Image 1 (cartoon, rainbow, N blue to C red):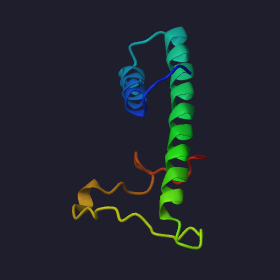
Image 2 (image 1 turned 60 degrees about the vertical axis):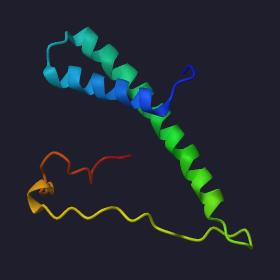
Image 3 (image 1 turned 90 degrees about the horizontal axis):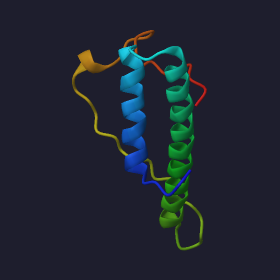
Length: 96
């Protein structure tokens, strides 16, 4: 893939998802969009891996050991936005 920023690739992937969800594309167009989306997803996953390695380097202690410091995600107080089992957003069964 050519030089591309993470943000631009993510926006392209989002646009592809929106087009595919609109169900207005032909089968051939949908397959082409899917292929491009898979390539973008692989690129994004690779970029995230690189960023994760950089973070690990930054978190190394004086002895060169990585200290586990979990990222604290903000807690969502709205229970209505939490996907229930089997609803969209339930990604426990995804292989990635």
